[in-house]
Length: 157
Image (cartoon, rainbow, N blue to C red):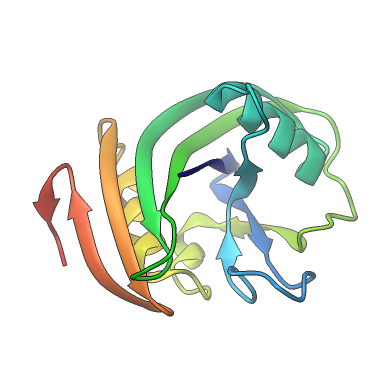
């Protein structure tokens, strides 16, 4: 099981989005996502979040909260990923001009759902916008197609 973090940083009605266009082999190639990444040995979710955000954006989060756990199954037979989903609304530092993962861009929240996103991301982004209480979401894919979504133990797809 892989553990990761994913964070949507908010400012002035916008999310900081990462367009994954720089790596040749990338499961997220061409998609828009938040920022985050894999745990290093011994890291807590918060430690991973803070390190990954700083590495990818140059920003240091000063206010954030964990919003849910997403069990991301990128294929019917591959390993699953536990993704600790965060939002952040305060930070210090300057946004880096060169992210090795892709292109960083502030996007107005109402426009985010029109981007090239994973279908399951649309589910949890709506939950974030509704300020839903802490949730558990399982997303199972067959290629780019979402074949199962289970929210807090109840199927939604």
